[in-house]
Image (cartoon, rainbow, N blue to C red; front, side, top):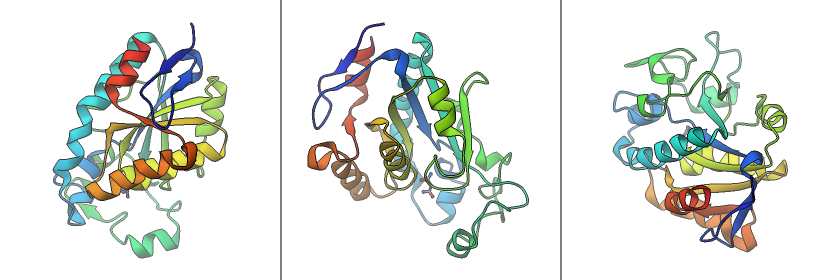
Length: 220
Ligand code: C5J
């Protein structure tokens, strides 16, 4: 397969080999998107997060149709909460407590599952992570390297929390990161815009951004 280029990417065109790219789907979980979930219980209006779902689905289907690498992450703690730092629990006391969709951010609970539209396949990389960044205390880097990936095209929620943390962790590990600007969402629109602006600032200090249509056009 030949090099593909997303010509419209910011701050300049993004080139990659399809065999060396992964689609990274970050935390598309009921806990963040469902009106009965954790995000809503914190007082957030979760409807804005749904805006990115169709674009993320379009990219997921495209990567699958081309047989390219796909990885999904979930913010998920073990049932005994042994992987929750006391500092995280102190500022997020709901973790592990019973919510409308089961125990909040606990692996296997209904709220913790990925939304129906973006369900992973068994053949795809699935990472349960205790942090906001998907590289901390997980096998994500090992699995991506084993799959030959050097480039990451990212979708997910929320832009300024788990997507941004993961993009920065990936960048520091030498991955070439592109965040899909209309396939990531935040409860706070100004934070989404600021995050996307930060990523591409100073010559792409963290990476690139591009719209779904531009990614699709490059891969088609
Ligand atoms: C948050 C996330 N916002 N997936 N998690 O706590 O962004």
